[in-house]
Length: 432
Image (cartoon, rainbow, N blue to C red):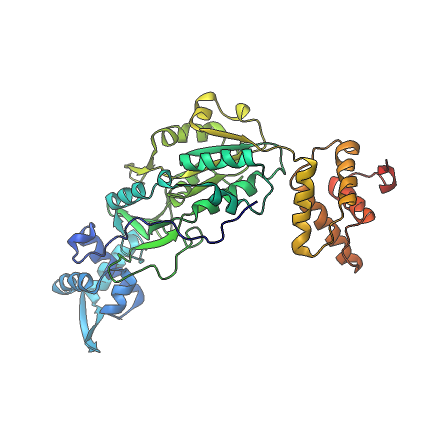
């Protein structure tokens, strides 16, 4: 399988420009003033430069905020250092800050407006991504996948909508889904630290989900945004209906984005679909409109509905029959379905060889042929893509226990088969 010799990031949407005034931030003056006051209360006296770095606004914008706070005697200048004012909160400012902190504890980067977020997400939509054969070949190079399936996967990625990967367990559906996200990861997108809606804060940027691009900022870039590779979010059996809604932290009293919002402009993988704590029918009812119209509705604690873009590539992976999980209306909205089944003898050999290579383990075709015969004809199991890795792991663990050299011989393989498949049959019984 060929692999591109060089991989370079795809062209970016233009970087967001840093606001020059409080008005240009798109957020109410009071919201930013309250945030600055809370930061001064929590962090203690700061220089104007330090406060600007923490609130992620330009020096001139923060200076404008502080003029208003000083006029209200909520903070004061305590001195100068290298021509930079040193700022401290006053007793009146502390009282006010404690009131604000009782409402929410958010003291991070200044938020952006909902309108700015919606506009940027739509500009960076996965539907604008152009995926070509070298991109897919590069991402799937570590897997053994036939060309026909590769074409289906590539076409699905270009749709920017969704795909259903189904087939027996152990056939590589999760590995394929994860590999597809690495295709998208070539693109770079802007993720906001937080969004403000009606005075409520929604934290979006998550370093565990959004891989930051180093040295992305320029003097004219709005530091309230972080340049990242397209995100990939994987959820499995732990998925609940609550995870699809805004998460209000009862202690910090501000929201964190739900999983689909964190996956915006990237890939959302629903692994083991049908085995979640949320029933498939619930997810169907929740996502019929988002999958069809590309918009989602989130609810704030006060009951206000917030409309956000549903712009991501969704991968459903399941070992259950899709027709038994959801109705035809839902399946219709998932444009591409790909069955991932048993592998051929040739593919099994190729996968086994690939597992052995990084372990410096001598590949023995004859031993693998006998393993194929045992799995198919004695155990009456289909050949799965996971078998080579799992059998080799069994061999390695046994060799470590017995303090022996790891070898891919007949005795080791048959012993691994017994441990892996849970059969009580002696190895000798597997002979032809």
